Image (tube, rainbow, N blue to C red; front, side):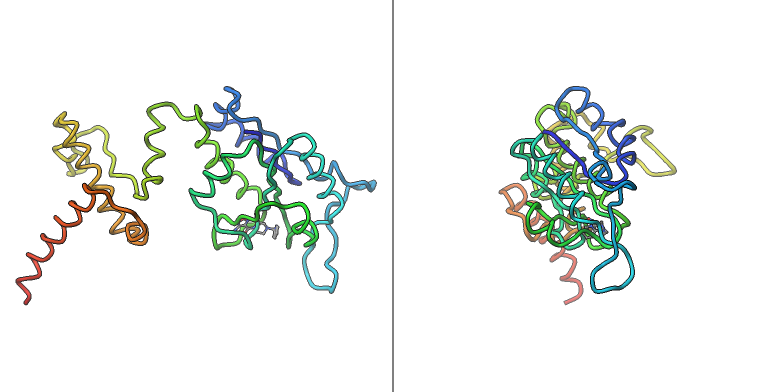
Length: 251
Ligand code: 4GX
């Protein structure tokens, strides 16, 4: 996977490329990444990338010419790459979109500042408009990093075998089960006995139930959407019976 980021603040990406799983993916040539300054494509002496909005009003708009030149140059280098604009007006990003983006050979991420970019760029040069959520941030750079992070960890060979199982939990449509590490007792709270037992099959059952309980309590919308297998249906049935037993006292 090749990532090219177009931004007026390419230095923001230096620490991002330089840490953790993204860094390891670059070192192992699983991904190729660079941040390119849109200013390099401005033709005037002061390399201006923004201008006042037609129709008046406050704020600035990113000029179309430098952006168009930057996108076209990136596209000539990355044959068959898709272009992504980070914008609050885009489709709200989720794991399924991360999977779709991970299937492409290259992504060109366009990070806007100010009030946004000239509308004519969106129409002619952008394949996907993506939002990372319904809130406003000051530029597309942080949004771009989130997309790159979520996509990178889906690329084969990026996560080790240990980590790779982890990424399945959301694909399975459930939240992760609870996690514990040493010590056995922390501030009066004990680790669930079953996790110390060494009974792998029982531990897997406990973890599935933990996943389902957390999803029910914290994100019932996810549980509603999910296709449940036999084992998961059995767990819900067990809970229903337990709740019905309690409710009988109140009838
Ligand atoms: N998810 N912002 C982008 C400037 C802008 C506006 C329109 C292009 C078109 C955001 C988000 C986000 C604020 C980044 C406005 N650029 N980006 N910026 N939420 O809020 O992605």
